[in-house]
Length: 118
Image (cartoon, rainbow, N blue to C red; front, side, top):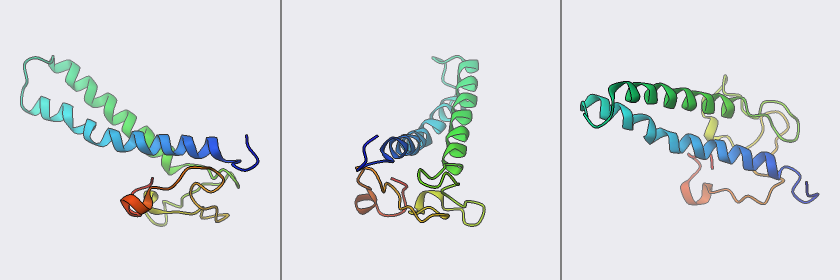
């Protein structure tokens, strides 16, 4: 752990979870569409199992992000029970640590806007 970037690993892990969550969004609907169109080249049970698996992974990622702990104070970073905008909150609600502070990660909020949690 570098003294200049003490929270590097924690923020990299957070960013990985958010990226996986964004990737999962379109993947959630692909098996639904195949099942709705009654595609014959995929077994029906495989589609149903993939739907269940994708939803489980998606929900687990949501919970990981919702209950993310601040690298500095180790309290919940978000207060999602007060305001449901997890990806747009840019500082810890307990200690005020800004998102990606203490790491060399550059926030993509300038490129994508503050709506996304990158």
